[in-house]
Image (cartoon, rainbow, N blue to C red; front, side):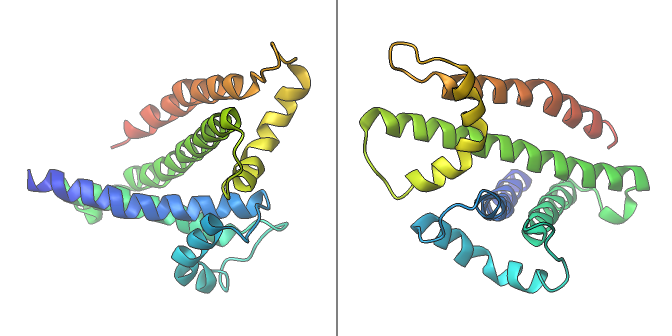
Length: 191
């Protein structure tokens, strides 16, 4: 029972910080407006790690690789901590298991990225029903438009209703079910 509580705390603390880093990466990638409470909160929460890491991990074509690498390292740390809580010492892991941890952390980042987009699409769709403007709207638009725009060009409105968010959520769910779940299952067998 104590191990379960420790696993839960590790997943919450390290997982939420990894999520914050991944959100920062995506907000910078899609050039979401920074003058926003959410963007500023994420930046303030992660600045203490990202700013020093940028000295060692340069950006590439305007992409903040330091933030992405830190998010990946947080996922690696989380997996190592969870294994340690279960009684597996990191020193006893073989090279294959260590590579498996590195790849599984990458898959978890990919999975979290898909969930971020799904939540953004869902919240944006709900907000559109009420026609209210929110400080979240520019961020949600910046995150979802690169994926929604191609669908909106190909799909006609049905009774003045845009069904592209629904189609995108279905596609993203299929991505989670087929390739990502298969990759996760394949890599987990290495342990």
